[in-house]
Length: 293
Image (cartoon, rainbow, N blue to C red):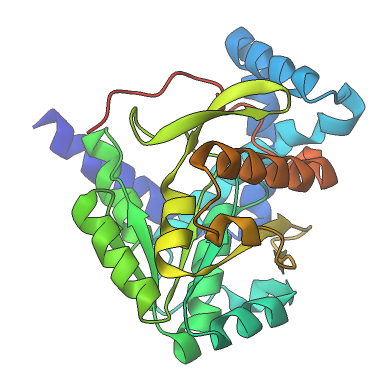
């Protein structure tokens, strides 16, 4: 009964917050980010430990504190806004030609979008923008472990041209089939996978557990791997960047999983260094993987 109350209350709260203009929520989120920074010593330690490992200064990364708060505050609007309410008027685009060229090869596209900028907006915007011409974006989805969050997060995965498959062997098979048919997907490449689904590779000089799903998909399907991210601008605006192809080695059968993981991490490093003020430094990138499920 308690879980049902939490689900109902959280969903109702998010729907209420979604009525507040997005720029206002972002401003409130910036303050929330600094409040958490001041109140949580563990968060400060994690943030500083990771930025120092990357060789970055406080001046280069301090704005990431407010950016993290903005990311949280954007979720109610992104997840529970009315069906049919488009995100596209808020989004500009750069590099879409790289995606279109890759799709012409007919082997599908894998968009890699790390914890940089607003990846939740990026996923929904890409699906809405590209879906009418290229079909649904199919993404692997693992529901939150907390039951009272599952319904709220699930609402964000029920958008037109945005489809999900379970993060399981069955879901991976569906994704392979989707790519073989010339479809596209988006993956968070710096998310720590469960034990047995990754290898250890350097990221800003430290070994981190890195997913092997990416090179396996690329080698099995021939899909083009493209880096992309959704940059947060002012006043509830964004720009989605698709970068030129740089990870062709992931498609080669003689590229080891360890080398592929290193190449992906190096590419993410380059993206992060271009805008360290929008990276999620509080995410424990070097944590131990959980038991596989």
